[in-house]
Amino acid sequence: MLRDITIGQYYSVDSPVHRMDPRFKIIASMLFLVSLFLIEDMLAYLLVIAFIGAVIYKSKIPVKYVIRGLKPVFMLIIFAFLINIFLTPGEEKVSFWIFTVSIEGITRAFFMAFRLILLIVGTSLLTLCTSPIELTDGIEYLLNPMKRIGLPAHELAMMMTIALRFIPTLLEETDKIMKAQMARGADFESGNIMKRAKALIPLLVPLFISAFRRADELAMAMEARCYRGGEGRTRLKVLKYTSLDAIGAGIVAVYFVACIIV
Amino acid sequence: MSIIIKALTHIYDKGTPNETVALDHIDLEIASGEFVGLIGHTGSGKSTLIQQMNGLLKPTAGDIIVNNLEITKGLELPKKQRKKYAAERKKQLIEVRKKVGLVFQYPEYQLFEETVEKDIAFGPQNLGLVESHVKQRVMDAMALVGMDYETYKDKSPFELSGGQKRRVAIAGVLAMKPDVLILDEPTAGLDPQGRDEILGQLKTLHDQEQLTVIIVSHSMEDMAKIANRLIVMNQGKVVLDGTPKDVFKEIETLEAIGLAVPQISYLIRALNEKGFALPDDIITVQGAIDAIQNVLEKRAK
Image (cartoon, rainbow over the protein chains, first blue to last red):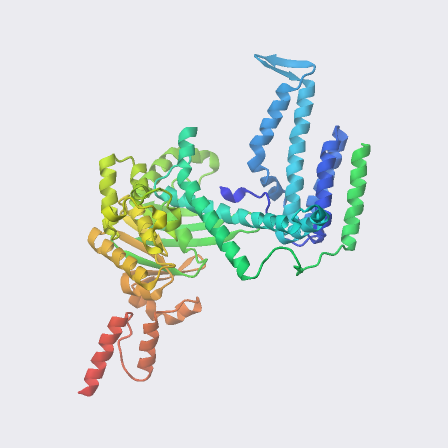
């Protein structure tokens, strides 16, 4: 059950998208997110979908895998959809009890749902195509100018890598503890909310303890290898822009301008 | 209380690039009162197999029958028709988990309560027992793992030593009074003394309480000492199955899959090559000492 979560995961294949420079990919993703909030009408949405479709195709990641990543946020999307359908004022179409549905409401709800889906697909594509190490390197690079105002760019980037790195580990751990407690008769699936919340204690306590233990061990292991922050630290892989990034930049620029015009 | 496994197959992440076949058409029958050692390399499917035995994992194909309850009933049907069996399956699983106690690897990481007593009581409480019965079960379980009830009941499980924590965790499963006890690497990460104590207690449990015990282990030495049946797994299949003496005779097969026989088997073989004529079914140090003394005494005469 917990194996389904794909947010923040890296999908390891060799594709042009995977080979691009992480800095470029981060900026492109940000532009993509901005573009999502610029667009208003149907035509623009088709453009966005065509763009993201092309990226997914080029990245060689199965569409099914990308869509599976939407599962955990499915409820959120439905919720946003319903809120928009019922709470947008406008020309009345159907009304019952305290609810009124307007034409504007329906269109807005659809747009909102699509926007959320694209938002998640766009961001998960970034992590699916970029290994955590590359991603952090990219983030660190992009944050470097902020160092002047005292922002610890390296430390922030390192924190992010570690967080990403530990998502699958902690999920695995949760799965294991859940099974162990189920073997002792714990029931996570039935009962009312209060009962279910209480049933989580045998899961959460060991999980937190193991997370702290892991953090301790990791800190020790890093110190043992003389880690002392970003100062004077050199890189194993130096980031370099390639012609691939130039092509990508061209495509993204065209796309972004098209979004603004449409 | 028998466990019958028929053509059991389990595939992880079916339909994704990470697809792995963990179990490949396993057929097994474990009878009541056996002491089984389940041996195999990391990734050979041991842990998957034991999780199947109390219904924590749903098999991809095949049947598992625990104590005449077919816990895999209806799973082979298409999703819609499965619903018919869902309620029945749930009931059966509760029943099976009562009967088949499963102790995971590093079980001490599942401890969560403030006191040892409360933690061990978690299982029996989930069975819906009344308070006085729960307390009795906790006391019994602690006695079985050799912990003094009065000394430890109010201690926090987190301030105990590694070996003690593990005993508390095992007691937590024993308190459910299972007929079958399955342990995944119960001695991993313990010092030699802790290891011998836990294995000794498991042996006693098996002998005195007539528990069926299944231990997953890497250690041939340990299994040679206590198990009366060994099942060797490799890449999701059962490779060897028999008494320790028979299994350890298959030195070539075991080495081919990257496992070793107990050190003492190598010594016996080396001595026999030098003309000692020792019986080839010796698997424990004590057995070897006796046999070698025997031969030497004969020679002296």
